[in-house]
Image 1 (cartoon, rainbow, N blue to C red):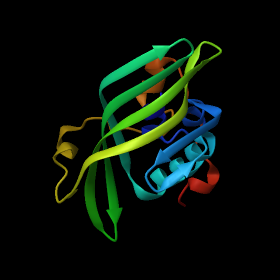
Image 2 (cartoon, one colour):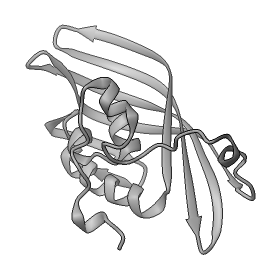
Image 3 (cartoon, helix red, strand yellow):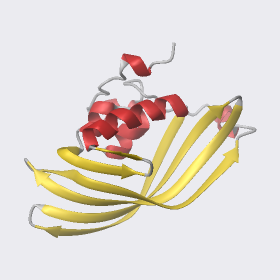
Image 4 (cartoon, helix red, strand yellow):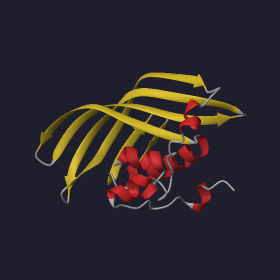
Length: 161
């Protein structure tokens, strides 16, 4: 849920994966989970055209209503800074402490660990010739209809006019 919300810039959905008294340590951005969701959504919208998380293996240890987890991920984003298009990739791990609350597992504390990063200049986007449907940061993305869910919207202050 976190990755889908992050990639689609759905602040409310991202916020809903955190306990109210949670904490997220995402490099230089460290904040309570709900506040982190607000700040990160704004940063993603201002810095990238698209974002994509791919999750790998997870190791999870459950102890009653608490759990610890390590999940590998690959995050990619397309940016356009000063007319230079780039694809940035981060390989790392989400290291989480989770708690079950009202039947849902929620993040109590998250540390993002960076294992590697790389940035490529994007001189040609070969995909444009394939006519694949691009991902959307709204209900126009087909995943919402397929999952029977809805995008909760993007704050007006994040929308670039």
